[in-house]
Amino acid sequence: MTEHTPVDGANFIGGEWAPAASGATFVSVNPADPAEVIGTFPDSAAEDVHAAVDALTKGASDWAGTAPERRARVLEAAAAELESHASQLIEEMVREEGKTRAEATMEVGRTPMNLRFYAAEAVRSGGTTYPAASGSLVYTVREPVGCVGAITPWNFPLNIPSRKIGPALAAGNTVLFKPSEVTPLMGQRLVEALLAGGLPVEAIALVQGGGSSGAAVAADERVDAVTFTGSTDVGHAIHRQVGPQRRVQLEMGGKNPTVVLGDADIEMAAATVVKGAFGLSGQACTGTSRLIVVDEIHDALVDAIVERVAKLVVGAGLNGDVSMGPLASAAQLEKYRGYVASGLAEGAVLRTPEPESDHRTGYFARPVVFTEATPDMRIVHEEIFGPVLAVQRARDHAEAIYLANATRFGMSAAIITRDLQRAMEFAHASQTGLVKINQPTTGMAMNAPFGGYKASSTQTFKEQAGPSMMQFYQSEKTIYLTPTS
Ligand code: NAD
Image 1 (cartoon, rainbow, N blue to C red):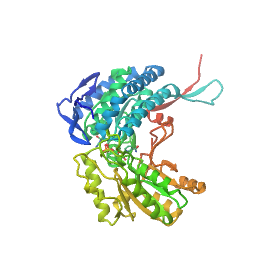
Image 2 (spheres, rainbow, N blue to C red):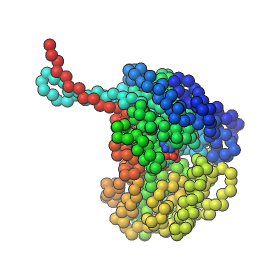
Image 3 (cartoon, rainbow, N blue to C red):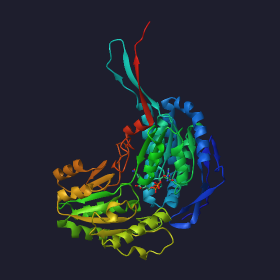
Image 4 (cartoon, rainbow, N blue to C red):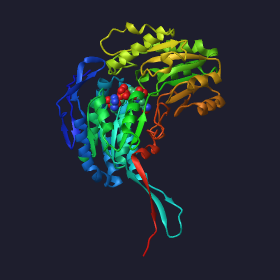
């Protein structure tokens, strides 16, 4: 690893980089080596959030009034800026969030693509004309909503914010960005790229800090729309705070199943499940946390999975041979340990080595596979967001569908089978926003709609990718015109 100088981070408010008004700070550390400080950042309070909204309110009409082509150019230039710093960003992301180099490379590559996608939407998304009485015109225009508050998690610290800030700015809104306190440097880097790309300073504010600064964003009545990705409990708190008059988009947790039917290729199924469950160290909202497998291949599939899991190398993400980085924070490690203990206490059978045997100082967590998991166990019905796979048995296809849907969450689900009829039956019966056939539950296209069903999302504006995403950031006004002399 190269030497690292801690970053002196700041908020960006009213066109200036500044500390929190109170002077309070927090540090971001390397989860592979928590003694290494990534940077010091402002621990913002409501007064900082209010100052940011004051500044954005003043700049709102200027940015809303810019030509769509200019907004597109800014996003494209920001994308190029990110690309020109890709190797630095990859290393910083690995150090701050804990991804492997390969995972960070993918995210750092995807983020500029998102910005370009929404740059194109800036000039594409228009209104409609409707049939009307002769001599009259009925048409719609799309207007920016106003000031958008974006509150984001740490697990995709560039990609998720870019999917909120990109469409918000493309539509002509101003943005108040509150990144996760686990990955503040990545949040700062994204804002720096937007400014370097020519974004007018009055169109964006960055406020660093923890949950209370996020709550202040949601509480400020001048924030017209709040887009949030994170845990279900926090999402529900934000929903209550925003209330019925303002727009809110909540993308929350998951408990995603992969169903494997008896005709599946065992090795292909094992590889797909391991990728979905243990990629990003199990910290993906679409990660596979439940495997539902029919009796006839249960034992063979579990053996194949356990064999593959034994080959996973857990370590610091900048090391080339590592397949799983550390968990992102001490809180994540504690949560993981709690769920492993709960699985054991509730009678699930541990098929992988004792997780407690890892005594390194980083937040490293061994991949865990439990079999004989049943619906009443916490490891089956609560989101863990770590490398723990609960294997459930099903008698047949019908019971597998039932078990897959027996959760309050509805993010993604997968089925592995060569039987197209069964696959389609599953796809239509699945109560999830995303269904994968012969693919891991993780991974999604940038250009297609994406959002959860049930407790994984609010059902008002659930899309968080693709062109329909623009609707959250725009109001559509209908205009009736009859010219008179
Ligand atoms: P989190 O809910 O703890 O935090 C998310 C963000 O909300 C952070 O910026 C945090 O500071 C802020 N926050 C915390 N308390 C707040 C409050 N009371 N009011 C306003 N803001 C507050 O989530 P996390 O640990 O950062 O991320 C993991 C969670 O995110 C998992 O549940 C995962 O499933 C979910 N997630 C969902 C998706 C999706 O697309 N649905 C994608 C990625 C992650």
